[in-house]
Image (cartoon, rainbow, N blue to C red; front, side, top):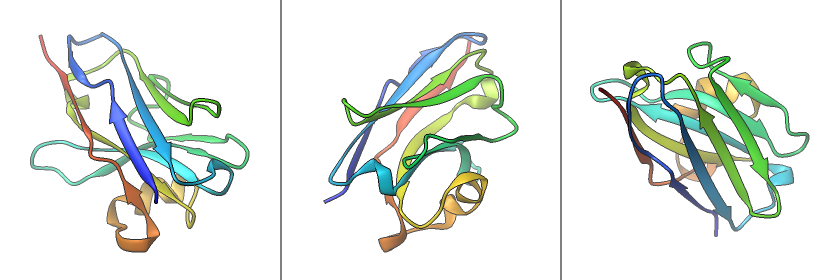
Length: 131
């Protein structure tokens, strides 16, 4: 059974940093991509970043390129999202999600529309950027 559990969210001032973690179980990362998505109040869920389990390739939304870094620790079965230079507009609930069916920038695009047997979602963690 696929399970994903996010942690690391919280309240941070503009310009600050946070590191989110997504602990996964029930599957081999080699055959999956894990993505980070976020949903702000009143807005649709959007793709932020993803990492390919097969070769470690990473992808980023333009809005976070250069500020966020996705990485993985295969020994700990965890994927991380290091977020720096945070802005108030980064405030959202952040979700990690795993899929065998998509990868790369296309996964960031279609991920928010997926459900059922195509994708597994974590429960989300709140990130608030405010002074």
